[in-house]
Image 1 (cartoon, helix red, strand yellow):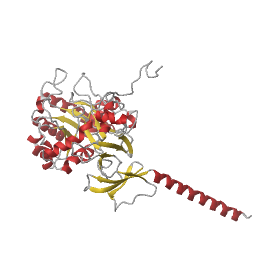
Image 2 (spheres, rainbow, N blue to C red):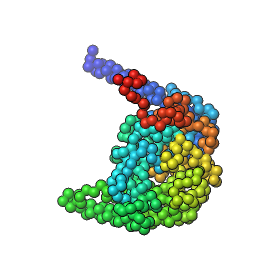
Image 3 (spheres, rainbow, N blue to C red):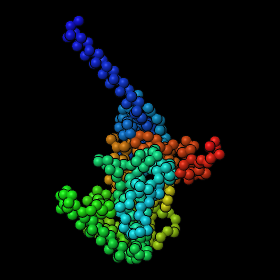
Image 4 (cartoon, rainbow, N blue to C red):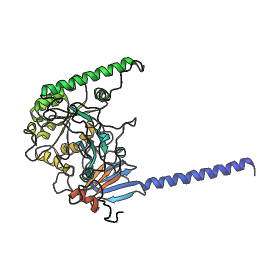
Length: 442
């Protein structure tokens, strides 16, 4: 046999091999596709789709639309969701699940702290959040400081370490914001401020130092001899000034809200106003500043004095003024399992249904800078969604399943997971009970 003939045989065999490999790969990919059919789909970024189809491939949304318009890939697993409702995963812009602490009692300004180093992702509170339909949270330190540290954006995937839940930017850096606060929370004995004026002065002083630190680095032009000594506190504030870290600012009273906007204008950081109990008093100023608001719904009396004028109408007042508004839990203030209720109460007070659902989903994604990735049911975005038993604004509706990046992380039909949704003995346990000498322990 000639060398030319042998070459043709080898080439033919190689071609057949790659054809078989390609077919095999196609089959494998098809098996990884899931189509949810027959549900009422509420994409948020578009009109409601009756008897819709949601197609998920490799953790991303591949298609969404009416059954007559969506072609389900051959070999895809099909899940009949008839009679159910599918909405985007809920996003909490202000959460304390996992109890990740920030600054301590040594001073009022501690931006160098980071909840990444303290959050417990095995805590039962994360299970409750999944049971409530949450797929993404801004995990916060507390509000007892003027600046209490960096926040951490967590996708509520299944994982035993915080690294498995992190959202990273294009450089691989864990994403998060910077937590700030004013009002009565940070007012106490020295070294903490005793007045609102002193609170603002301390914040100004810190940001001026951060500007100087930034300018020294720029003048050094990467010359190690001219570089200032590394300062973790200043680094965090410079990130805020340069727009690399969104400031999430706890504020309640109308004058405190205006102080935050004043500081934002002075130092140029991007801000999301949190709580804003008195938003209805200064809504024109908030709207003119184009400052997004993450609000909380409190449906019972009590709490702090500066929140005494909070109204259920905050949501509709902000919505009508054109302000981007989201809801948050501040869990444990509002239980993550009942997060849907915030939107329902917003509608009861006058919000549009569309605006209220957006406030649980896409608006929150925008406030975290993640709107291109999640927050609505759009092809190409992460497959973060919730399957409900009925209308999201009904108190009778239950969260049946929660999916994060195409993986189911909560299933109400599973007795162990259902426990976190309804409560009872064991629902507050962070890990399974174990004791030597009992239940087979050694």
